[in-house]
Amino acid sequence: MLKSSKGIIYILICVLLIISLSGVSYYGYKTFYIEKEIAEPSEYKHHIVLIAEEIDNEYWRLVEEGAKKAAAENDIYLEYVGPLKADNDQLLKLFDRMISVKVDGIIIQGVEGAEFSELVFKGTERHIPIITIDTDVKDSVRKAYVGTDNFYAGQLVGEAMIKNTVGKQFVGIVTGRYDSINQQERMAGFEEAIKLVERIQIVGSQESNITQIGAAQATYTLLKEHPSITALVGLSALDGLGIVEGLNEIAPFKDVYITAFDVLPRTLSLIRNGEIDVTIAQYPKEMGYEAMKLMMKLQKQDILDNEVYTRTQIVEKQDVDRLRQGEFN
Ligand code: BGC
Image 1: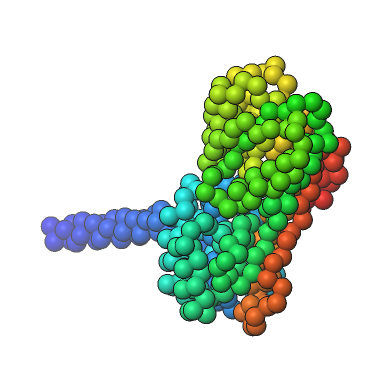
Image 2: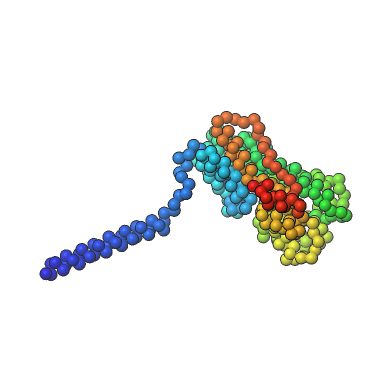
């Protein structure tokens, strides 16, 4: 009797143990196993990497979308990476790491300085084709550039300002980052366009660090230092939004002519309601898509056409509806 009750207790303990062990392993699996939606790179023909200036920036997400579309159509594994906050050192480290793991191709924003060109050289020596996107570094050995002609885009800012304003204009510039080549080129294009127009003068510039809040702060500083400002120009995608935010906070009734960059949905809304006068459209999805297509060609042979300029245009209130109907997708 004693023996059989001991046996029952023993069996019960075993059953409980089995139940709890299977519970732990089931829930443990659910908690720690991250399901991979994308199959392993080894299942694909090619593994291509796209390196963004800042991973979660709305503009770069559009570049990613375009590149992903081309990747899906062609059975390519696309890895999208980038620093959490714009930072050249981190971007260069990522670039170096991707060269070391010998991916099949790298699409990357061009960065100022010798280190970038040296890495392009290192990658090319290891037979990894490299394409610059959004920003070019012409004197590197990159196979091609895909993106806006940034000097021309800057000229468009100037042309629109000449056309849309009358009388003296004192211009404040909000630039993404001083050490970004595309910002320098846009600025040079703008200066070139207004150089013979005496009534338009640049009075100061500030960096936004490519964030909306940074652009709002830059606007605040510019207006404090130069109360004469009559026009503000944002040179990167979130600057126009930050300029409007900054102005609404500190000088809501001041009449300022505003130029933004890019056609993010929020920028288009501000154009529609008259808070932004003009924006310069770029086509980031097209950049991503075209860069991937070129990268596929490069997997087989070298290419001749190594400068692919995507479209750029001035967008004003009367254009917004056309854009909403899909012109920009
Ligand atoms: C530029 C990108 C930049 C982005 C920042 C765009 O206008 O072309 O280089 O990363 O703005 O928001």
